[in-house]
Structure formats: structure tokens, C-alpha cells
Image (cartoon, rainbow, N blue to C red; front, side, top):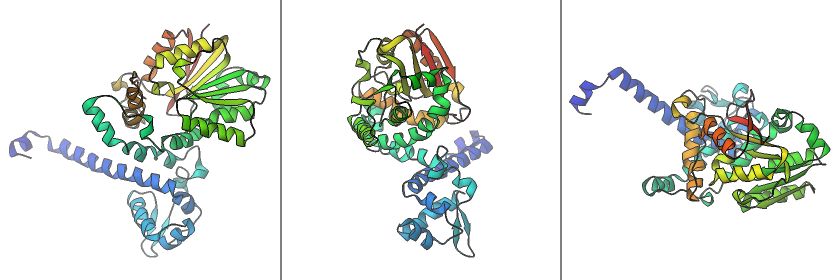
Length: 360
């Protein structure tokens, strides 16, 4: 830094920002190691152990001790795992395990941390897109559907029958009696499979662009012996099934679409006159200044830039992005022909809005 520049700086403000950047580096590194801890089941192992040495932790987890010790160093310095230097023992407090283990689901934030390395894996391609435009295709994300399915189990499946579906008055009763349901962007189909098993008199159809995800969904439905659900790989913008469904759902899917306006119009056409479209999508504003205090604002824009927006642009799409926001969502729903739209929130869900839309 030149002497002239130093003289013009507010030194207190500059130092505060430098400290914040160092904290950011440490937290970013912690997120990577938290993902490792989830994938190796180290948090699950630690949760069942008293204060223990790295050797015993590694043996219990069936892992290499040297790697486990280095990972523990990151966890201790991040304030996640406690360390007793006298006995050289490590311990995961119960209060931390409540947000880091598979037993803690749907509150397992370690599972969500997997998005950080998954997104980082496409950094080179994203940088190229910054320079040349275009986007990064779905095929560049080999673990995305796996991670998304696990996250969906926490954010959608865990509260589906008790919290999400009851947002629509009378829907549970209708599902019990038997209705036709379509899920748009169903991924590996976990939500639809749960509904098919819970409501055997109803009929379910799942569409997704990914053939890999559809294959997984079909295989799981077959394993569970479900004959009231089918999955098909197709571009949901081309759905042409007029007045076919009583309920259409879309869980965290519309903002990823290459042609979201066409998809929403196709959904509106596919609904019966008194049908309902239940859309879960990201809680945010369409205006960046209104997202400054969003509890996951930076995370939302990052996931958007490194996945949601770019996969749409890779297909020549609109590139709405995850932070398309409530204002834009309502605009597009009205444009698609939904004259009645309610926006609801769930107290336990800081990430999503729930749009209940009808044409009448």
C-alpha cells in the first residue's frame, strides 16, 4: 500500500474489514471440512463417543488416523469440536451435534455444507462464463443430484405431510380420497414417492430434465412396490396435458428452468379448473438491497451464480437465479394465468416461500 493511499484510508474501518476477510477465509475453510465430516460420518461417530483420542475416533469411524487428526485440528480451531490438551482428547458437544449429525435431520447443516465443494468444483467453468457468457451445464455437477436429494429430504420430505401439504385447505383429505398429482422438476422423486406411499388412492407423475435423477426415482419407487407413481425424463416446458391434474407441485425448481414462463404456462394449462399449484421457492426479494439482512443472502446468491442461474443460461435460458424473489415470482405467476396466489411461510423454514396458486 502506498503512503498516499494509507493517508486517505480510514484505518479503523480498513482493519475491521481485513479482520472480517480473515474470518471469512476461516469460515469458508470450515464449511469444506464440515462437508468432509458429513461424508465420512465423523460427526455421527463423534456424537456417540465420550472425550476420545484421534486414534480411537479413527478406529471407530474406520478411517485413516492421520487424516482424522488433521480434520479434528480444523474442527477444534473452528470451535466445533472441544479439545482437552491434558488427555489429547476430542469431544463433540451435544449442542453442536444437534446441527451436524444425520440423527439431527432435518436440522443437519453439515449436509447443507456439501453444496460448497460441489459448487466450487465448477469454478473454472464459471470463470469462463464470466468472460464469454453462456453457462455451465447440468453434466458438470456429478454430485449435485445426490446432494440435492439429501437436502430435499430435510427441507421438503421431512415436513411434507405435516406442514407443507396442509398449507392448502382440504388437500390432505383430497389426497386420501384420490386425485391426480404432477411434480415438476422432481429430481430423484423423494417427495413424490413419500406422497405415493402415504396416499395410495391418488395417482402421481414426476417429470425432470435429468435422466439420471429419473432413473434413480423409478428404481426407488420399484423397490418400494409403488404402482401409483410414474417418472419420466422430459423438458417440463413442453408438457402438453390440458386439464389433467388436480394438484401440481414444484419444490425449489421453477427458478432453475431455462424457460420458466413457458413452464408456468404449461402448469396452468395442465391444471383442472379447480386445481391447485403449490410452488416452493426461495424466500428472497427481487431487489438486492432488500436482501442485505437475509439470513442466507450471500449463500443464496452464491448457489445461484454457481448453479441455478448458470444451468439455465447454459440452455440459452432466462437465467432467473435463486434470488429471483417474491416480486418476480408473483409477476410470472400472474403472467401465466394464475389469478389467485397466496404466499405462505413456515416458522421452521427460513429458506423458502410457499405459493398457493389457482386460476379461478
